[in-house]
Image (cartoon, rainbow over the protein chains, first blue to last red):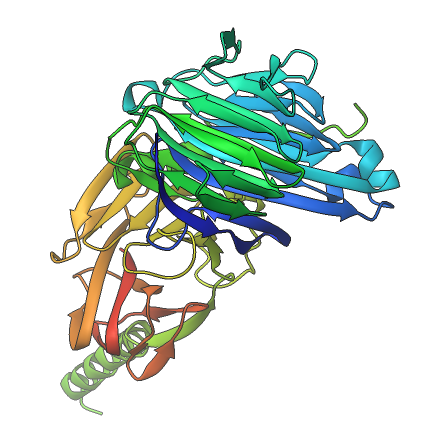
Length: 290
Length: 203
């Protein structure tokens, strides 16, 4: 059974005026390879705003996959490749930024205008060096098209965002082997989660409380980081709980991550900055009428 | 007046008339000037960061006229706050040609069009700008005090702050200001703590 390495509470960070919970990175923990960042944004939007005034406007990425899980509300994604899609609660936006892309991610127009609950998690998955200059791609996955399964006691609902779980496979294409799950856990629900021993793995709790292996407890906004010393671990819901599991095969390559780019060397970061400034990652002009 | 005397005197007078305006214009040419240059606010970035495209930057019109845009971003290595491993990035335009500078702990990079070249911070060298042959760059690390000799032929030297505060000929430079020296053969640069400056020389 995989033991718990560390349980860490999230920290608040300010991203351009948006206050987020950031369980990763933390002081002294730059990554849990291949995962570089987890941001949890949960808010009640007041309404009375234009879509262009909310969310995150056009910005670039290169060298990794920024992935957004939508829990409440919806996210309108636009990018320099011409993708324009809204994904609602329960769905996922998976973007492989590859050689470079400019995108914006905003709450849907209706939420901006009328207000309401808005909650997303964005996490970053690193790409191996051989894929960092691939052509970018965008994969929206609705709640309806996400494979779901249940624990034996039917108290835990599991969405398979990426990889394979319980003989069910997601269609999302990833750079490296991953298992990404989202959990809706009722009090008392129990489940054993098998994972390859080499996968680095952690659970992030959006809200609620879990007991791990009948021993360790994690609560709201905690990140539970597992050791690579077993092939499974057990979770038990102590209350109604929402959580995600991020796990995957480590890439084990040098890391240079600055701002919106993730490469292997500082020189490559400079090249990304130069290419962005020179317009090589494309242009995104947001049309708020569509 | 004797004709020979007249010729001699008028010759001297002509020489003096010819000489004097040159002396005046030469003294004007050699007149040293300095001008403070207002620079836009520096933006800091945690992991993620909202990196605005260069063209969108605000740049208050400021001398020299050939510096047509400027943007400085500091990317925190650990995503939380300043550290020695941060990457400092400066985008600037010399007469509409983009040049990108990146500075980390030990080296710096200069990106021009398709090309990115790295240089050591320990070594002072004049960097050519392929886009703008009349301009050269120079990155200097300041420890205490040093005299910088302006390269021969340089008519203007723009001193931009990269990291830390310093003085140029006793005038304070912080992250929101640079200084433009004109017709200067050299200057004294000084800092209490280690600092880095980038110089652009116009020839």
